[in-house]
Length: 214
Image 1 (cartoon, rainbow, N blue to C red):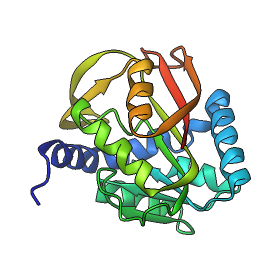
Image 2 (image 1 turned 135 degrees about the horizontal axis):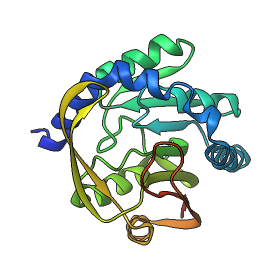
Image 3 (image 1 turned 135 degrees about the vertical axis):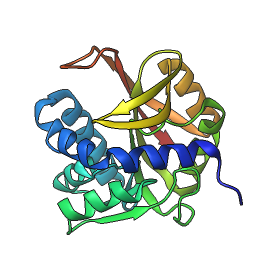
Image 4 (image 1 turned 180 degrees about the horizontal axis):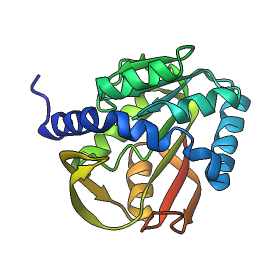
């Protein structure tokens, strides 16, 4: 099967910036109490359901996967970029990280208790997102939980540089209501929605949707 061009472009871009990205975000959660609180709530819900392990899709250098582990979850990471996965494995050798795509996860039907998609959908074109959410629904156990975060907006942007590396990478901004509609169409019930203002060097709002597979 031919790989969609957007996946190849994202892999190349994140491979190029992997070292700089890992350095920048390794301790990022330490200064984000609201993000940590949301992750803690997600972890508590997953633990209470007792439905299986958690996949951190688009895990990057693994810092959020590792944080999920400190919250008592059996978490593993999946990322499209081999260089990002290499960064994660070096930093957290006790955890499992795999090269893979959220468009076709190598996970059995209903095998997961939770999925974290931490800023992971923003490099997917809008017409690919319904298929991604359907894939999440496939691998989650009934009653499994999903936490999705993304940058708020409406439209497409393009980056030509990141962390000192030339790249060619599209990104997509989403209104929260539109993401909620896509989740509902894939069989999820949205349990909570939070939008926060920009922090630090951010320039746009961030949204977090907590959903549960029916």
